[in-house]
Length: 444
Image (cartoon, rainbow, N blue to C red; front, side, top):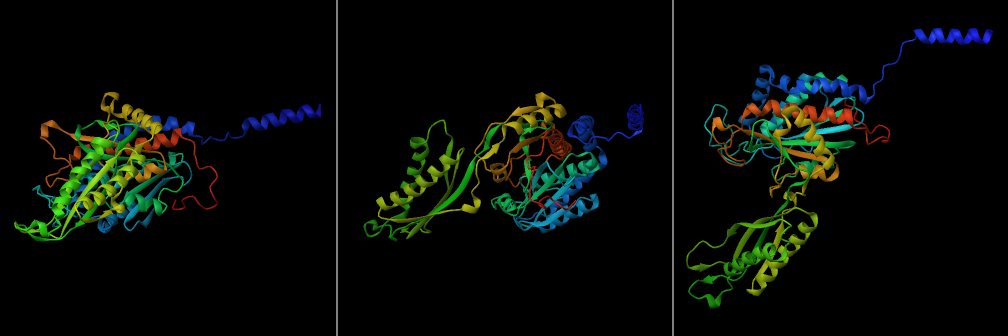
C-alpha cells in the first residue's frame, strides 16, 4: 500500500513539473518556414534598401585593388560593430570574417568579394570613382552591400539560429587568389558549406541562375620570352628571327585544342599579348607572348599546361630560338564546382522566394572565379543574380569602364543570402561533431 502511495505521489509531482522545451532543429524549421518569405519583404523596406545603396555607393567612390581594401574593410567592420556582430580581422591582409548564431555547429558561410579593378571609370554620375585608374567594374561593391544587408536580417533572428552563419568578406578575387589566402588563414575551419552570388547582366532582375557540377573553368595565365638574334630586316640571313618563331608558336598552340583535346571536353588557349620590336626594318632580339588557358577538369588542366610549355619551347627551337615559359601560379584558379545537394537546396529556397520559373539553369562558361578554392575543399554553391531591366536600357558587361549596377537587385541578393543560410542550418545536422577542445569560434 505504501508503495502505491509513493507511485501516486511521484505521478502528481511529475504532472506539475515544467516540461523542458526542445531546441532541436525541427522546431526551427517551423520558425524559419514563417520567417523566410519575410526576408525579401524586409529587405525591400525603404530604410533597408537605402542603407544598402548608401554602403555600395561609398565603396564605389573609393575603389581599392586586391589586398589594398583597407578603407572598404574599415567600413564593413564599422557596420558589423553597429549591428553587434563579432568578427575576426585581419584575415588574409584585409579580409573580415563575421559570426552570427550560437558559435557552434553546424557552420555555413556566405561570401562577398571586396576588390576593384584597375580601370578608369567612364560612367558620369554623382558617385563616380574618386580614385584615378581604379573602378568597381565587376559588382563587388554590390556584393558587399548585399551581404551586409543579409547580416542585418540574420542578426535580428540570431536567437532562432540552430548553428552559426559565417560572413566572409574576401579580398583580392580579381587575380590575387584571396580565397586561397583566406583558406590558409583558417576562415573556413569547421564550416560545412558555403554560398556566394555574383550580379549578372545576362538575366532579368528577380531571376537567378546556377547549375550543378562545373559552372566556371579552371584558369591560368602564362608568358613566354622567345630569344633569337636581331639584325637588319634587309639581311634576315644574319639573324635568328624571334617574330617568326613566335608566330609559329601561336599557330601551334591552337592545335592543342583543335587536334589534341576531346571535342566534348571544353578547353581554351588564347594569346592576348605579343610584344617585339619597335622599328619597321629591325628584327628584334626577343619577343614576349602571353595568354590564358582554361579547362573544365583538373586532368585536362594539368595536361594542357604541360603541352603549352612543350609546344612553346620545342617550336621555338625549330626556328633556332630559345624560349622560357612562366606560368602565373598566383592567378591560377581551379574549376568552380557546384555541389549537387547544395544546388537542389538553392533551387528549393530560391523557387519558394522568387517562383520556380525564375530559377533557371546556367550555362557553364570559361570564365574563372576564385570561389573555386572554397568549393574545392568544402561543398559550395555559386549562383548568378540577374539585374537586367529592359526599361532602363542595356547594361555593360563586367570589366568595362562603362559598367553599372542596377541597385534594385539588392533586396533579392540580401534575402537569398539570408534564406539559403538559415534553411541550411535548420535542415542540416552538424558534420563536425567531435572537434578538438577549443577549436570552435569563440567570438560569440
